[in-house]
Image (cartoon, rainbow, N blue to C red; front, top):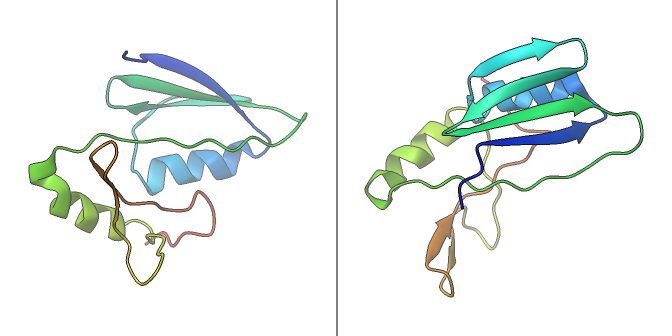
Length: 110
């Protein structure tokens, strides 16, 4: 399944916009007073302002295996990677993936 567009809610539009356009460096496609859209590959992520409650979202981006080391260098130039047990790369043997995680807030933006 390929998701081409998704709408999400946030209580802090400016913080979300700053994060998604800086840390993963997603191109800003559209912005209004109460929303913004960034492009993540073939998917448009639109965040709308909400005063109801805060949502937490978890995204995964597919990176070709032969560019894994470059992806790490690219990410660490933009934000800090989360660590666990002294490492910042995690493997999921069951689904055959390697993962890097970085925080939505509190990250370091050069």
